[in-house]
Image (cartoon, rainbow, N blue to C red):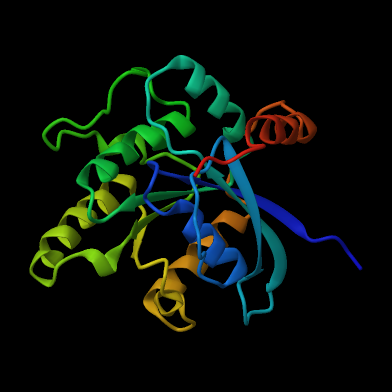
Amino acid sequence: MASLDRVKVLVLGDSGVGKSSLVHLLCQNQVLGNPSWTVGCSVDVRVQDYKEGTPEEKTYYIELWDVGGSVGSASSIKSTRAVFYNSVNGIMLVHDLTNKKSSQNLYRWSLEALNKDSSPTGVIVSNGDYDREQFAENPVPLLLIGTKFDQIPENKRNEVLTRTAFLSEDFNAEEINLDCTNPRYLAAGTSNAVKLSRFFDKVRNPQLSTVTCSVSAEIVMFVVWLYCGEQKP
């Protein structure tokens, strides 16, 4: 049997926003019963059909790289994470809808992964002042994912969704809001499922360039093994 194509998608965001639960849901189609903190990076695989239902349909693998969510400014943390950012085909930016700070930190995460952060000690958001042109020419597809939607009080939802709409504009990316403990948010035919499939099609599109580096896959996986050998509760 012919080998399947493989692409790499980073899953970035602060600790505790639900990245591991999201990745488990996407790859295993199951709710993660007892999530733990990710140390370093954890990799899971999803099988996806490119342009499903068309003559161009093709099955391929998506590697979802769940990167540990510490946002400390220590250079050692960032230099260790940097090896996970090689040969990227797409990025999922994950934030907790009940935690505004986790939304603001997505700017830092995205710039760190794309090697565009010239100021490593600060978040680039200040009173809504943000240069959207930084992502206008970005060739790497982005998807914005808000978690813990079920935990937003009914009387606060409009306010929160308005805020996330501005994030979507800034990153020039579609947004998905969900509860990772409820698979129905990604059920076939829902708007979330359509957006997710559209994002993965962009990731798979061979005409989109990728952020590449000469570091070999063997070295990357060795660092993953070395740095991610344990998880803390």
